[in-house]
Length: 199
Image (tube, rainbow, N blue to C red; front, top):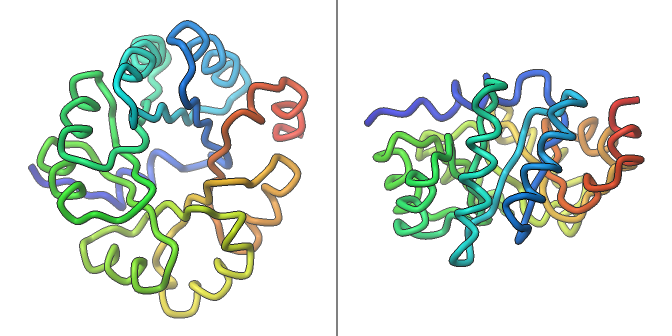
């Protein structure tokens, strides 16, 4: 199946600054936290499925998102088996911490746009060669804001989701440096941080 990775994520991430990542939470808590965000106008939710059993939370989030018209992604998709589990749970797209061409191919074959992870110029270049204009930068806080500024020169058409250690107070600084969306986990469980992001 042909998947236009760039066009899909252009639409998904339009007008969004933050993506919630609910890792290792029970299904009911995943849904409750997601609904709180959706009510606040934050649409993006990722549920990692790197460990067995986490598909239940993903499937619950997908079901809760459907009436609102939101799409939920499966994170930590690092094998073809993960792609199958993500598809079975109803994920609309897959996300990985690294760049594996086989996983990208398996995901796109399943009709699921894939957001690969990168941390070097070589990986950004390979992702671009494989047709990806959106990538996940991980771990963003270790790489730092200057990393995004440096990549803008050789890869002006690539867009970035910064994930890993970026807090609510740093969102705008990373966006100004070149990240389009910030992936964030447990910090978004705090209503005060949600209010901060909406201010």
